[in-house]
Image (cartoon, rainbow, N blue to C red; front, side):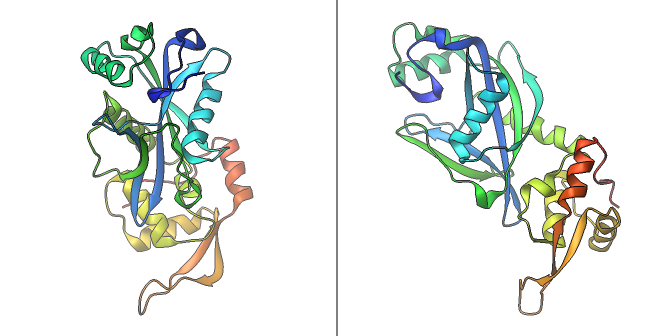
Length: 257
């Protein structure tokens, strides 16, 4: 089967009509929140990973397939957060230009039509991601949330919607658990929360509240980060964390002063 840019094959009959999935893959590295994007060499805008849904797979399986094809990871934490169906979310002229650029097969005009996009966000540990490219002439790379390049269609809006969803549900979303390595410092955990909340948090108050919830274990290890700094390392109590997640309990009180 011919595989081309944007996840198209040579037959529209392979896919569910008018449905796509858009994946906001978030990682945390060197103190900043990052999103994984892909770009085709002959197209001047970046895209969120994702694409079409085969007729013989579920929406969830399509998301897993697209995530693995970009990160090499399975069993990623994901959440469906919004459905994007605005009548003008796709620029018709831009779609026509894409078809012309890639010499898609006859009958590909269906790609011009509006798609309803199902938005999922995924939280991944940055160091575990092995970036893959599905197509020749494609670049896949991380970008900081605060410095995004020009994006295709409504993909900037999709990213913001994902961040908004996490912001309002942050007490129930395991952002630290999913984004940080097994061993981390309290400043690193604080930076993760600051990235989503968009503000600085009081260091002492943050640490006191975090340690009071019983989901973290202090290790008998430190990490040297400067000439005179060697903060303690912590790990998550995975059993308690998993139990709290499965019961739908609030993990953390995010209303830090």
